[in-house]
Image (cartoon, rainbow, N blue to C red):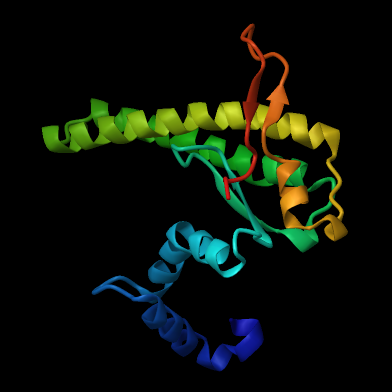
Length: 184
């Protein structure tokens, strides 16, 4: 926004965007925009592009352990590896740190209500960590294959290259399929 419209009216533009998105009460304009990108942008994008998105959502699963948007036209065979090492791995480390903080909170002398909330959050974070571990295996497999896309093939064909990825073996279990991107 600053690059497009200048620094002198940045806050005014951010406030306008937040109001347009439906800013709620005492929520900051920046928080409104952040929430929109986390919760509403992709659904709006899919509607706009009639389920042929040019922004692709890397999505780890129902626990929302990991989500990252990429712009299809900037994709190259190393994009999946970059998503894995530059975004997923740091997030996994953040989850581990958060687990440590939650353990300290649970063992401290905070109220029972706060301990209960911390235990619930710990359970959620643990589920997200597990989801990310499985997703990391899929990302690793696809990254090692350096998948190429051809823009002339269209979104549907290219998108499908990242869906239904079959992992031949996983810790002694049978082969299974996983989607790298959110379903459209």
